[in-house]
Amino acid sequence: MGGICGYISNKNSEQRTLLNMEETIISRGKYTKQFNEKNIGIANLNHKNDDCKFLNTDELIISIDGEVDNKEKGCKDVETIEKLYIKYGEKFVSKIEGYFSIAIYDKKENKLILVRDKIGAKPLYYYIEKDTICFASELKAIIKYPEFEKKINYRALSLYFRYSYINPPNTIFENTYKLEHGHYIIWKNGEIQDKIYWDGIEKFNELSKNPIKNFEEAKENLKDIIKQYLTKTIQYNDNVGIYLSGGIDSTLVSSICSNISKKTINTFSIGFYEEERNEAENAKKNAEYLKTNHHEIYIDKAQLLSTIKKIPKYYDEPFSDGSQLPTIILNEFAKENGIKTAITGDGADQLFCGSKIYDTVRRRQRNYRILNPFNISINTNLVRETDLRYLYNNTDKKNQTQVDILAKEFVLEGLFKDIGDKRYNFEDKIDSKSWQVRRMVVDINTFLANRINTKTDRTNSNNGIEIKSPFLENKLIEYSFRIPQNFKYYKKEKKYILKQILYDYVPKDLLDTKKKGFGIPVKKWLITYLYEDLMKVASKDFIEKQEIFNYDVLNRLIKELKNEGRFIKNVQQILWDFYMFQLWYINYI
Image (cartoon, rainbow, N blue to C red; front, top):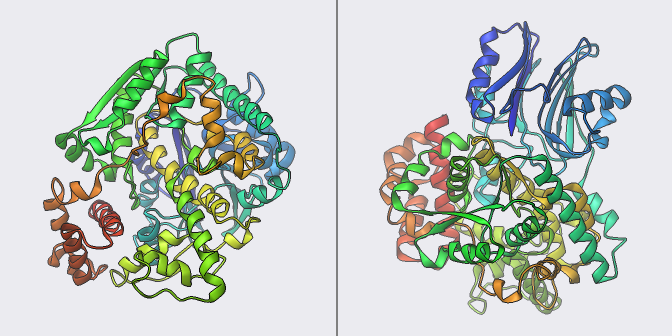
C-alpha cells in the first residue's frame, strides 16, 4: 500500500508541481519522501514512516510501490533493487518477485526505468509529450501536471464498453498509457523503449508442455505453495483479515489460515438484503465452523447512494464492475476494524476454471464442431441466443472464445463512434485447441491483471490496506500452468483440485450451497434507487452537449431495460458501464 509519482522534463518546473501530484494520491500513503529539483521530481507515498520504499544516492533515485518478496533477510526493498540494478542493469527485473511498480532514475545515464510486476497487482501510468515524461500510480496525479491535456481516447472508449475496463497500454486519455504487466520501459532523451520481461502466454506455452501427471502430487504441491504463502503473510504482517464469502477460494484461504495461525483470525463479509444476491449467511456459517472472529455488514439503500458518490474518488478512469461498490464498502469496513492486510482468493477463478464463462465456451466449442463442418450460417430463430449466431459465424482464431463480447457488440451498435481494436486478438498464440483453456489464459492476461487488480488496488490502497492473495503469487501461477485441465475441470466440476484441497479442512456439505456472486443487482438498482440519477446523465441536453453518445440509441436501451427486452443481460451491463462513465466524466472533464 503506497504510491509513486514524478516527472522528468527538459523544462524546469515549479516545486509545487510535484506536490500537487502527490496531493491527489495522498490516500495511498500519508508519509512522503521525494527528490524535487529543477526539471526532475520523483516522490514516494507510504503508510509507514520509514525508508524502505525510497532511495536517493549519487547515482540513483528509486521509488517503489509494493513489496519485493525475494529480498534477503534484513534487506529493504529499495536496497534489494539498488544492488540488483548495479549488478545487472535493466536485467534486474528478471531477478525480483512480488507485487510492485518501480521507478528508477539513473543519474549518470540520464534515463528513467519504469517497471510493473508480472501479474499487474500494482498500477503504473505514464504520459509522454515531446521531451517530457510524467508517471504515477494513479491517473489523477498525472492530470495535475501543468502540460497535461485532457483529450479523450476514443479507441479506449471502444474497449471500455466491451470489457467494462480499459486494458493497457490504453487509457482514457490521448498520449497517456498504462504500463502492461510483466513489462518495463526505458525513457532517455525523449525516446522510449517498451520491453517484456515476463510473458504470460509464452510462459503458459512453455510450462504446459511439462504437465504434472499424478493428481495427488499436483494437489499436495499446490497445497504446500498456498500454505507457504499464507504462513509468510500472517508471520510478516500485522492486523491481518480475510475477506470471506460463501465460495471455495476464500473459504480455502480462511481454512488454511485458521489451521496455521496461533491467533484467532478475523474474517469479513458483506451482505445484501436481496436474498438472490446474498452470500453473507453462507460466509457466516463457514466462519462459525472455522471459529473465526467474524464481522459482517449489509448494504442498504442509504449506504449504496453515499458510496456511489465516492466512485470517482476511487476510480479516476472509467471502470465498471458489478462488485466495485461492495468492494469499496468492505474495505472501508475492514479499515474501521483496524485491518492493515487483507487476504483474498482473487485469481483462483481464472487459474483453476471457476467462472461460468468457462462452462459456456466449452459448450459452444462442442456446438461449433457439430455445425461448422456443414458450413451452416446461423441467422434464423433456430438458435434463440443472438450471441450464438455470432459464434457460429465467427471463424477468427485470434478471438474465437470471446463470444460474450460479440454478443455485447450487437447491443452496442450505434451508441458511440466505435473505432480501434474491438477484441483481444492473440488467442492464436496460445498452444491449446481447447477453447476453455484458451479463454482462461486470455482472462489471466487481461481480466485478472487489469480488471480484478484495478478494482482491488484502488479500494484497498485508498484505505491503507494491503491486499494479498496466494493465487497472485508468481510461483503459484506458473505451477498452475503445469496442472492439466482435467485436474481443474473434472466431469463438469469447476475448480476440482482446489475443492479437493479444501475438503482436507472442512466437510464437503459445508460448501454445498450455490455460489451467488459478489456483484450488485444492477438492473434493479438502475430502475429504482438510481433511476433519477441515470436519467440526469442520459438527458437529451446533457448528451448533446457531451457529443459522445447517440441519444436515440441510448434512450432505446433505457426503455429495453425497463421492459426487460430480449437482450436484458447485455443491456443492463452496457447501461451500468454508461452510468459509471458519466460519473467519471462529470468529475474529471
